Length: 223
Image (cartoon, helix red, strand yellow):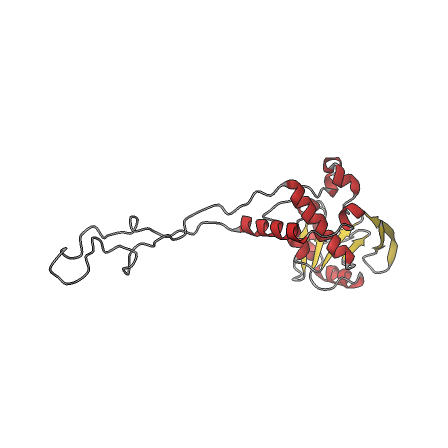
């Protein structure tokens, strides 16, 4: 197992911890990650687009002109698709874009994304966040102290409201709970930061219900 340092929020090391090879040390499966990310983005689509067909457009009940004798093409309605103000032929209608993705595929994609970030030393573990009250400046200083650069994904427990409020106003930080950890958020950020208490472990992988804090199996496609 790979070993990384556990960092203090004020800077420096507070020890070390081993990363689970089954989560942070596998060969990234790029096609699976691509498929799962596509499914997540598809699930975000509202699918409320709609156009009216010639049967739904108002008007067009009367024949524009008589069938013969005018020298013009024959038309039975002024709401045909080729006329201005007419209906739309084969236009979009409301639909559901969500895709069914097997849980094992989502898990493999997430572990692949985490392994990719770990292979580039872009996974950090902090000892714990200690915000007595929400302070955005302190959150910014903490990221600087632990060497977090670029866009960061912070995995923070739901119960730690002060930490969530401290980071949520930073444009380069995205806060997520352990149960919402997903492929798209991992791949769309430069670094992933866990706390020592919510770092995914092999116990989580085998039976996530044993530890609700570390669960990575409840992956939401639209998160």
